[in-house]
Length: 266
Image (cartoon, rainbow, N blue to C red; front, side, top):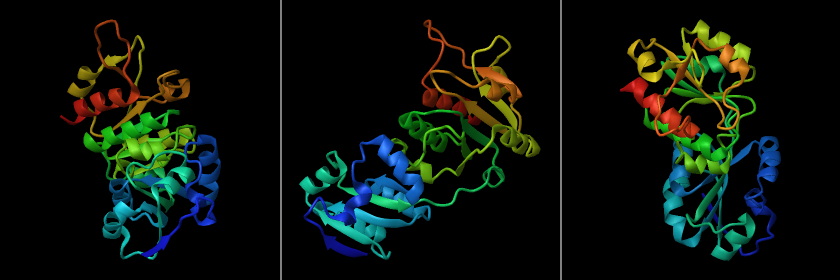
């Protein structure tokens, strides 16, 4: 790696890191540039271990040794900046001291992700980056083999998603569905039973579904506001519900995913 001291927040070499609190700007910039942001040495280490390639790293002086252990052998510029420059560029206090601009890897096909998997989590139209990151963390911790994300779902590689997931978005194989009907065909051709978590009169309880668990399961979770779409429900083989008490009819989507995944893998 090449250490480069930068003392001017207006330096164009730091442009990848500007205004990271502006969601609209990041959403517009990332797909065009093929980049995403990894924040903290732990997250960067997981990204590099997964084969992702950094374009550059922004680091504060106190974290140089930490980042050297991760990217020291790579041909990558490491911009060393004072705390005030890091905050001026990014728009927030960089408490963890390290941010990397990463090249986005090419996503695999749905068929490639399903190969060898027996339990898949599908996130349909979940627009909140925090929920997406938390769902990936649950998938990694509780034994899901892969994650599929619908076309309108939030970006798993967005900075907040990556941070909340603790870098597990690099650990669990995933890809984005391009069209729901084609994904259902792929799932069925691979022998998956599609289980949609939703409140419906004909839903079976999670315990009942687990008691007669199919060999390969695709668990579909919808957004907290609208729930699963009619298209997703129509494509499901089973509708499953988590029994609740206390007058509560639903959980946060990541919490519900964690409960269902635990039940299916215990």
